[in-house]
Length: 152
Image (tube, rainbow, N blue to C red; front, side, top):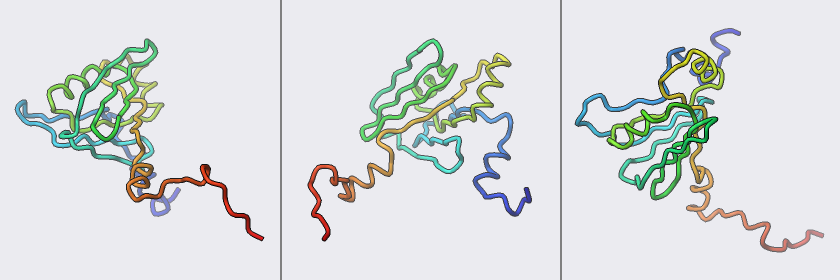
C-alpha cells in the first residue's frame, strides 16, 4: 500500500510503537491528573473525562480477566484486561492520565511473554457519547412508542 493512500487513522494504528503502554500517569509524585483520557484501539475515537466528576471505582477479578469499573457522575467506564492493579493504584492516587486499549494481538503476545504490566483488552464508556448528546439535544428516538400516520 502506498504511504499516500494510507489514511491517518490507519497509519496511527499500524505505526504504533510495539512497546505501547496500557496506561500513563503523572510522573511527579505530588502532581494530579486533570482528566482521564481513553484511547480506543480502532484509533478513530478517544474520550476525555474530568476527574472532578469522579465518584468511585471497583476492581474485580473474574479469573479469566479483571474488570476495573470507574464511576463518574455522568458516565461509567469499564476497563477489561489483565494486571490492572497498577492502573487502580494510579487512579486511587489521582495520577492516572490515560488508558489505552491494546490490539488483541498485542495482549496475547504480551501475556504469552508473561508480562507483569497492565494489559487493557477493552474499554467501554456508558452512556455512549452519541446517545448522551442526542438526549441533551432532545432527539430521543420515540418512533417505537407512537403510532405513525400512514402515507396514502
